[in-house]
Length: 500
Ligand code: NAD
Image 1 (cartoon, rainbow, N blue to C red):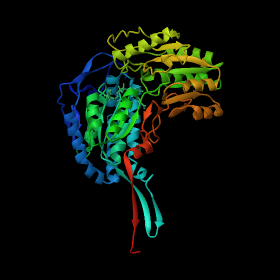
Image 2 (tube, helix red, strand yellow):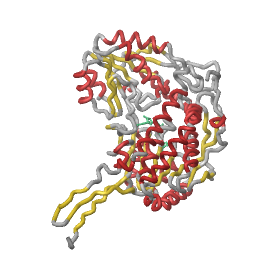
Image 3 (cartoon, rainbow, N blue to C red):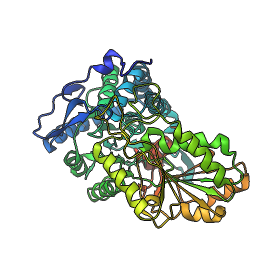
Image 4 (cartoon, rainbow, N blue to C red):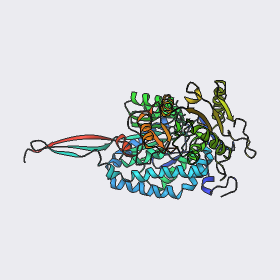
């Protein structure tokens, strides 16, 4: 596809107003409050996004709660048949979903296609739940005379997931498949900035024909979230978003007696060793920083070159940055799409200017980028700051824009000290061909995800995904075995038989 903004008919058919999906049917949202959904590349309004009220949330929770007992009693073997069907329905729609998320978020179509694939991967993993439920259950025979002890996994009730704008299709699917496969019922509250992908995912849910009330969608903003957090019949909350909101979710959900896993923001560094294959590594480094226009919780927006590696790294990076094409993600030649809102672009410009005021050198300046075909887009050109230090805000605060902060270190110890200087611990990458360096990095860097010659170390669905320090609040992470532990409780049963 080469023409501008070409799209499939289904992806073009955006509802005027985004709807909820509750009790197995689409429902209009009665609310005086909401916001427009705006294509960040074109400025075009795509739809209206209503904010569900506490009353609407209550209806959804009651519906999900009413569905719980029957769903729990449904064999896991039967429950996963819905997931096999969901995988097929999502695959049938994956191009439409990729296009919808490009239109609402701005990322490139290639990124959109990759994202929905990673989401479907979690449906595939959760389809193996009968086997996964065996892990951590088990039994011990003969703990006393004629006595045995068993641990049995059980679902807890209604779970909700509250998701961010930067991965509109993938992140809801970190939660939905595991929550329902384990026998819970589920309510998704997607980001109000990108509700369209969820509309398409729920068209797939609707086609699968889950029993009414098992899988529900509620649109809204902070008040909608708070109504979910405070509702007595919500058993647990999964959250992904910024750190201040993650902390609020963690505290409020816990105060209301719920399980909670809250993934927050990040500040990730990449380190390039003298033992790195620099020429091969640079496209990966540049992809990590500028892909998704930098709006990625795994973006390594600070890059540290060690010793003699620095000059070659700088030269190669500048060459690659020069080749990046900024534009509408629907145009196939685009590498860097727009930022989600004009306010986000303004915030990033302010960060760049503060860094310069604090002493950084602005080597590539994307602040004044304007796209000739999309004058209303929230674009920023790729930007590169050099000579940053760890006492600057640019090295301590998530940029979430197409900006690299480049700096040098004398050795790996100094580089690791820089990496660990932030209050976050989501991810970090080391570029090296030296195994001992790689081991030291994994051992000493305080982050949940470490990439060795991998700039975006997003765990596969069969591993957990989560950070540390200010990047995560809770203990059990998303995906894989952690998800099974989060969505189930383990009941102990001790048996004695007198008649033996
Ligand atoms: P955000 O915190 O603004 O919003 C996330 C969700 O929280 C949305 O659904 C929103 O409606 C809700 N929300 C916002 N303010 C709220 C409030 N005051 N009370 C209750 N709910 C509220 O995050 P965002 O801007 O959509 O997403 C970007 C952030 O998410 C970045 O910091 C990024 O690093 C982080 N993120 C983290 C991970 C991870 O795995 N750790 C993954 C993706 C994104």
